[in-house]
Image (cartoon, rainbow, N blue to C red):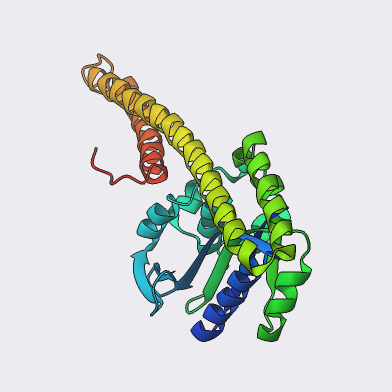
Length: 272
């Protein structure tokens, strides 16, 4: 079953060691580590993101808005949960109810990071909580866990389920495999992970396409309202004109705010 795992630390070395432990479990076949991200909260709405693909584990610094754009690259539940947990602008404008998040989970993850916190957010496949919980027990941390297929059903469909089932089958084989067989099985698991990621990216592209259509309609509505506002300026009755003008200005402001949010959700710079 796919779960979202959230673990926070005060010390960088412990956080990196814990991530190593989770990767070990993945290599043993005890869990499947689909996606993961480690972030550290700084002051002034800035975040460090760990690049764990290098030997020196370099950090890159992003503003809250830029972090939201980065997370857009993580199609699926991890992107949304990172945004909710870090409180970035992208997370703030998402319609959480659309993703069927339960209230108690939102309360757990929304804007929980404090300055200096280092948080691992990962999407994992696991048959039991025992493996991760036992491996992380020496760190004396609280593991927040939720079922991804319940909390993010918008991105889970039959094709994703089939891929996950194949991964679980291969993971079971890995546990019983000989040394010579393990390399082939790990290669197949990695290929299935890539296939799953590509499918989620396709779903994310469809989401953005829908947002783009809404954005275009919003811009058209703003243009129409501005035209009507201009026409009212030449109205015969000044008092009525002012009332209508103020009402239109409020509507235009609401539409402009909506347009800004769509820009953010589409990971665009606001240039219009």
